[in-house]
Amino acid sequence: MPLIDRDPLLLTPGPLTTSLRTKQAMLHDHGSWDRAFNRVTADVCRQLLDIVQGADTHVCVPLQGSGSFAVEAALGTLVPRSGKVLVPNHGAYCARILRMLGVLNRASVELPFAEDQPMDPAAIDAALRADPSITHVAVVHCETGTGILNPLADIAQVVAAQGRALIVDAMSSFGALPIDARSLPFDALIAASGKCLEGVPGMGFVIARRSALQASAGQCHSLALDLHDQWVYLQKTTQWRFTPPTHVVVALAEALQQFQEEGGQAARGARYAANCQRLVQGMAGLGLQPLLDPAVQAPIIVTFHAPQHPAWSFQTFYEGVRDRGFILYPGKLTRVETFRVGCIGAITPNDIDQVVHAVGATLHQRGVLSAT
Image (cartoon, rainbow, N blue to C red; front, side, top):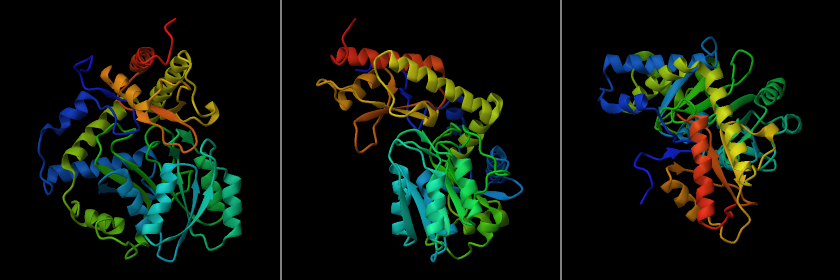
């Protein structure tokens, strides 16, 4: 039986713990054709554009479904069937992009990197120079399989200098880390409601360069995932083409209100950074070390080496920590055993202290740590 009677806090990269206000926003029903709901959609899209200062050059296209739906929609809409995509790959979400491109029958080139190393802009530059047929580069800003942060600004400048288009999976960075469309050239930036904006899952969105989206008419492989068609219909009618996730949208509107009240991206990022610092320090006190060098660690999720002890089992560890009120994530690496702890969501450094206490108590109970 759990040791506490509240919902467990989600120390994951999304879904994540949301505020009471965000939960309460979902208590009412909304008509998908209702003018009031359509105004909410328009306001949410405006605010999402404003977070990256993109209103002059880009548009925001919302889409039903998880973030992966929006990633596939961006690839299928913006990459022509004759296109070719370079994908730097050092983790699970980079690999997912490659798999999507295969399903979409879009040509791709994989540029592999080690799981614990960031993408190298110089290597990306060399790959583009070596293959003039590459039309696009698709990168993951923060690879949540490890928590590694890639040098997005440097990559974007290399891609632009080579005259190629950039598609960015910013699923785990949007709203927490600075991204400015006025100085960072990209054709698409993709994120979702249930990440650093602290909404609930169910809505992806693509911030697309207006000119690139306009040029993409008829390219998409899918009716439901056609971003151009979705955008045109929204502009014409103010409505979604197909039934929208109404409760998710109004929850995101409320979450965005709290985002602004907190102080926007800078303040949100600072809280997450404080969570991350407190987490790494606390876990070090238990003898648990992070996988990544601090220089490339994003303040989103931290991957820790699993204890080298015969009594270690992730499943029993997970269950013990969950009984104490916290849900963690398993590792997602291929070469070493790890587990992951998220720093994002409606949590504070004080919550992180409780997480560390729960981890320590569980490891002592399982005999992995000695009581001293």
